Length: 192
Image (cartoon, rainbow, N blue to C red; front, top):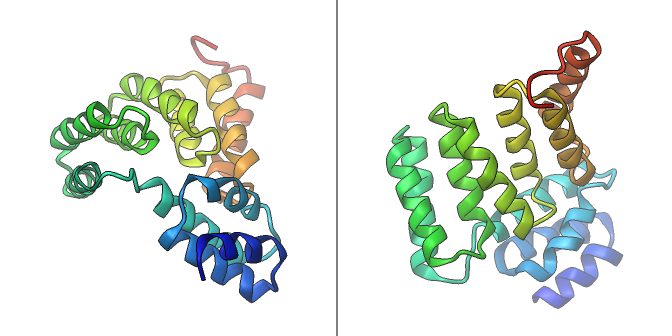
C-alpha cells in the first residue's frame, strides 16, 4: 500500500484498514499525512489512536536528510543516557542544518527541560509549534515548562492546545486539571 492508498483507507476504510493505513503512513508517510493522522487521534478506536500517534511521531522524526536524522537519533540516545548537554549540542546542530524541521526544536526543548532549564525550553517549543501546529508533544512540553516556571495560565493554555489535537492524553488531562485547581485556588502564578 502506498501513501495515497493509505490516506484513502485512513479516511474511508474499515477499522482494521484504518489501523493498517496509519501504520503504513508511519513507515512511508510524510507531512502530507499529518492532518489526517491528527484527525484520527480523535477517533473512538483505541487501536487507531495508538497507530496514528505512533505514525505521527515516526513522520515527525524524519527530516528528509539522512545526516540530520542521524544527529537527531544520536541526540535522542544522549537524552536516554542523561547526557543532556551533549543532546542540546546535537539538537542545536540539527536545527542549524535543518531550521524548518520542527523535531529538532522539540527535542532540544526536552533536553533543556530535563536539564532543569524550562525557560530555555519554551522558545524551542514555540518554534516547533510554529512549524508544526498540531505537535501535541511540543504543546504539552511547553505546558510543563510554564508549570515549572509557575506560569499557570500559560501552562493551562498549552495543555488545552495539546488536548485539542490529542484528546486522549491522560497525563496532559491530569496536568490541566491540577493546574486549573491551582488557578481556582488563587495561585495564578507569576507572569500570567
